Figure 1 (cartoon, one colour):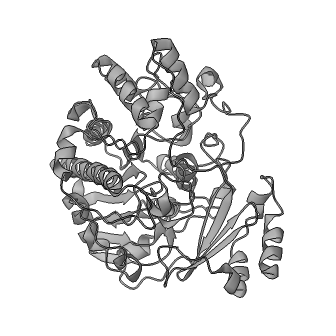
Figure 2 (cartoon, one colour):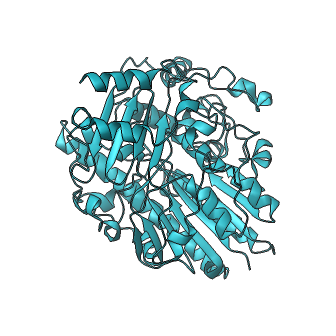
Length: 514
């Protein structure tokens, strides 16, 4: 009997914010235990393998999810930042599952057509069938639910809030939060209308529908949390009033404010754990648990104040690290793997668990042996990660021409200004705090070193064994290591797309002159 596969996929969950069972390898021991109460995730970890050094392929929603869908490195797909749709001509592992008899479902934030702010009130548009889905409730992310619904809902979650008379207060609450990264007050939404709880209801409904079918299934549950803003319900907030989380690395701001942010972030994770419990309970109730592989991962991390920064898009550990747990019958129970793996490796891994041949052209490498065998060999000598926010897309509607009127052509602040004008609210003239810069960079990571190269020629090298917090750039004193890591991965496919394509030559020249 073929395995069912459940992929639980929160948004912006950084890799070291996991229950203490994972805090055992040398790198993470130095960061201290994170006091999270996540018993359902702990149970998955005890019944499977946790990968302690997993990273994404690009620390931004659309490109990261595109790499996962395709099983390809960032520079082998044309979804460079949130201004790009996933190319409909690019094969997905979802399609391969469907072609081999799987029901392929998804609920929550897919982010495979980020510039097109339209999902349909049911969460289904025809492009999802091309991508390989048979069932879906594709919904808005946190801020997209607000920016897309100033006039009327364009997605299923906004429509749900509208039907329950909650959309107006939710929009006003999010606009308040947008300009204040330290805003940690309770959301005015009732607990059952909170986005992640709504996602779970739809996911459970889909799971129950699969019990009536004879074929195996794959289901991806995309939670909106713990992505900013730090909105949590009253029920979630009261559980973390006294929790003390570790201080950020090199943080120079207000200690009380950052502690409140971290408490809310932890509360969102604990709420997601509760939702995992509901999903597992549905599997048990329908007799599907024993035949289901459960995978927990995220699209990217969150800086959470480290190096005085928030959000993602940065090459630092907090931004690029992700949790990764593979659990279920046949997996190596209670195992913690320190091997180098990346998010896109899940494409080949899922196909492998489904007994479907992995296409030779995929960059993805299966982690099945690492997840099921005690002495499996590593699959990667290094990790390659990149982000080019500077590449502009002049064809945002491509593949979605019938929804061209919903393409996002304004900045977030312009959306907010328009909303305030339409509703008679005062204009807000305030920069968003700690906003990531649109800077092009790429990085190569081994078990010992991390090299970051920027488009402008700046180079950073960190010794991860001695400096896991990445506080001391040693590039100028280790020229041989810099050159060695530069030669590990060929970034030339990416370089021709950006201004500054001769960056590597300039960087090497600068290093040689140091």
